[in-house]
Structures are given as C-alpha cells and as structure tokens.
Length: 236
Ligand code: PGA
Image (cartoon, rainbow, N blue to C red; front, side, top):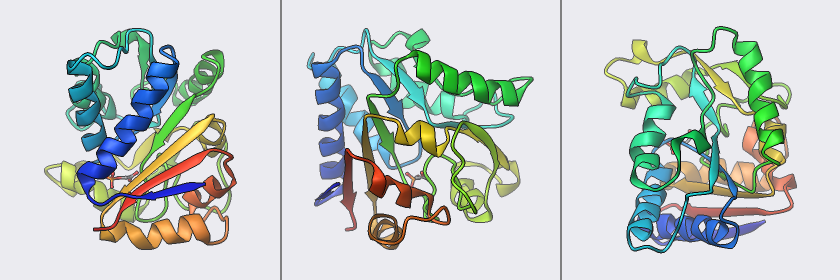
C-alpha cells in the first residue's frame, strides 16, 4: 500500500489524474473502473484539461462504473450515468458505447447484477479502479455489513449515506433508498486500485480503513489486502 499525502484538493486531483493518464498512455485499451461523488470531480477536470492539450487519447479505453441508484433514468440529473457523461465522457474522445454504468432501471435487477459481473469478466477485468470512500467506510455502495458481499448486488442505502447524498437532491425524500453496486470481489479483482479521500472529515475513516482491523463493518478495510493499492489523501 502506498499512501500519498496531497497538500491541497487540486494537488490530490492532479496526482490522481496523473496515475489514470499514465495507465491510459501505457495501455490505451485499459479498462478503467470509475467512481462518482464529489471527490473525483477535480480528477476528471484535470484529465479533461490534459486531453484538450492533446496528451491523452481515450478512443480505445473502456470504462465500468461502480454503481447506480435504482429507479433513476440515465437522463435524471442525479443518476450516476448523467454524472459521468457531464463530468467526463462528453468532454473526451471515449466512444459512449465503451462506457458502462449499471442500469438502475433494468426490469430484472438481479439479472442486471449477474450481467454486470459477466461484462467485467468478459472485458478481462479492471486494470485500474478509482474509488472514493464514504464516511461510514463504504466503497461503491458497499455499506457496512456483517459480511463482505462479493458480487454486484442491490443494496439498501444506510441512513448516513442517504443524508450525505441528500446535498445533491432538492429534498432528502428524493434520494433513492436502493442502489446497484459492484461487490467487494469485483473491486478487489482490479489489478490496481486508486483510493482518493479529501477533507478533514475523511481523516478518521481513512485511518480506520487503512490501519484498523479488516472487517465488513468498515468495507474499505478490505483494501489493505489488495496487492497494488495507492491512496491519495488530503486532510487540509
Ligand atoms: P464523496 O463521496 O466523494 O462525495 O465524498 C465518496 C463516497 O461516498 O464514495
């Protein structure tokens, strides 16, 4: 595990963008596992800036996102598909058909879970997975639990997650209470993992996750067991 302390949010964002860019430069057809939330926005902005300078070509890159709210259409501004299109995909030359976000609207959500894992396997697995971390230690929407859920699955969101995400909605009642998320095994099978955490409010959970016991009550703690984990944090 490598832990890098960034001096500011923009330093964190540039460092994370450097690692993702290097991955795509070294292997243009990389499978990138991507994340939503406020933390990666600066990383995506930096990538777009370097793309505009001609430094990176995404024409053969493939992406798989971690999660999506159940019940939100891709056109819904709060959906993670919408977030990814607006914050990254439409600003770079990645073919939209190369980008994958689990569907929150599938008629058969159980089948969608199975199909999403099959998709990742058929792509040859994830080369680099970007992750944020929730205050409760969640990664993707893998909430604190009694056991690590391995494969893509449907989760009921915890109260603290609903409250944390309410800032993006007009009313907390509009926050969906279910999501589809890659499981711990899907995440842990990524060849490399890049975890980013920003702000003084993330300090405690990062310490618990990286240096505390490995337990499903802190889902991110499993990352201690990953052979190629880089953490970039800024607690300023
Ligand atoms: P944040 O969310 O980047 O908005 O803090 C991280 C997460 O909940 O995974």
